[in-house]
Image (spheres, rainbow, N blue to C red):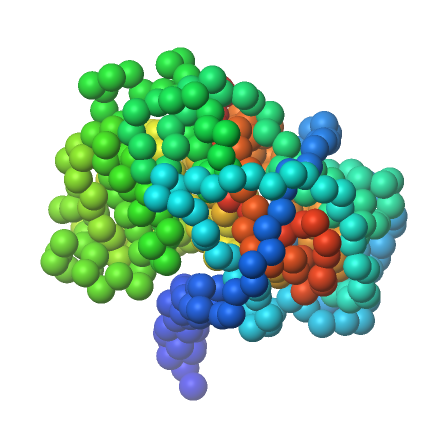
Length: 388
């Protein structure tokens, strides 16, 4: 076979990778929202870390050596199964009232039912130090649960789900809140931009809120056959929205920067998966004032991409769901290594200027396929960027 033919075959194989990954995410979404649901709910916790964070890249590696020191590490390969099976994911259940909020439950202590599983992880960069000074799943889980259940900012004025007029923080537990302090909020009658990434319709109240704010609203869902307003392909330039109107796009978030095409028309993205930076460039948006993202376990690598590309600085308010049932796309390692990576990514958001204002637990009590008590399989987190 000639070198030219072999090169063509390799190129064709590379083009198939993004659609296959997107199909895998769609499968995860169907199982997340279609599996039997339990009714366990829980409350808040407390605490956090304070070590300088540098963005890392995580890639599988077959052989490495564990030195046992924090920072730049090579982790020894240990036998066990990798977190590639999404079939055991627990699901989230929303039992909110018409107002979008429900009464809260009291906080309780964290207890972990330990298990043993080991896989490999190769970290290129600096992770946060071990919570206990050495690998410990219990310590790592306690640290991240504490971090994502203790708000760091108390906003006197907030927007509740479905509402577009600020009020005092509600006494009931809401799935999310937007901090409406004047110095953190778009000025009245000034342009604002809102993005929503959701495949299950769980963003309905978010869309209602940002439409009420007269934002330029864009919703991204690769499973929506009615997206793109009838425009061919993934044309974003031809589908720019107006204030108070939702523009729908059959597109999803990617964490790898795609190769640029010489023949791509301006404003048209050739793939159904794109980085946030590319989407914003195509829509000619420098800032996204409000962003909602339920990325079905792709959030860890997407957040890392935002920090690597600097896109995170252009987001003002972020509502996102983090999934703890399995390690996530392109993330692998022992239980304690994966949880430490999660914490490092979230700590990186805080180092970028984001402060947590609200946390709402989902259903299920499975973390990395282990049963835990008083922790949840997912959490919806509301953040505000204090730097912008």
